[in-house]
Length: 336
Image 1 (cartoon, rainbow, N blue to C red):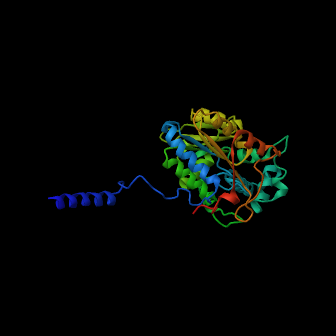
Image 2 (cartoon, rainbow, N blue to C red; image 1 turned 135 degrees about the vertical axis):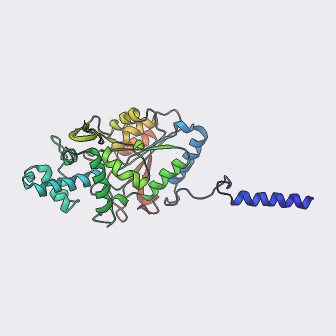
Image 3 (cartoon, rainbow, N blue to C red; image 1 turned 120 degrees about the vertical axis):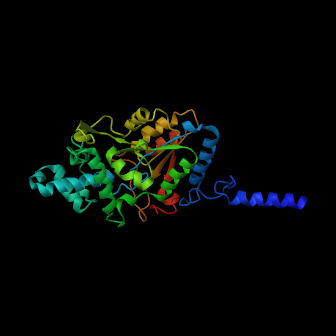
């Protein structure tokens, strides 16, 4: 009788081990294998452990910048690659458009995206050609066609330096971090200064984010209603304020999420708005800045755009934010 009971117990144990979903809770698998074994990696995993213990699931909100944080932004970034491409398509059909500086810049960048004679001078104090080119490129186009253009163009055009499709130039360590947070019941949002339509075209297929979790700058649009047809939202040559940058990120997070994040990750001082917002959380919170310092595997540039912000390190120190040096912390760079 005892042998029979022992056999039943042994059989039950074997079935439990072999049944999907019945594995033991203890799992020693490294959730961030593309991160080097550094104190910064440990701080992330330690934070998540604390968050799981102390923060209710509904309040585990994480926000990530896109360009330069999740995906490459050098020499251009997704929305600008698309803007340059479509401006050039327009000027090919109508060469008189090349009398406009925005179209001249686009033609030069179409030949060489790293042309510093353009990129060093296109964001002046009196007029910002960066914004002008992005807004102008698809003005008059249905937003869904813009989304589709971005999806198709970024999926086929390749990096001049790394010869991979632009849509694939996400950082593997950051993709792992997104998945690690999701696995621990964080609700994760991408919060980007880029146009929301570009986010809709790029992110769902590449990193599995649906539109509800993609917060970008909204280009102004006008609805066009047609019977028995989908409504068109025609893009205008302007945006709805504020742009999703600096304090605009905080405002748009509040407007679209309605909660304060507990975890934030960015790569420039333009992300400090959402860092400050995150730091006001009454729950355990953390903010991380990705520093591009790897000229061999990616690029090196300071964590600000436009006017130099030489006090950025002081901001990190004074606020307890973390600096993640790519060279030091990334075992590999590009998404697998």
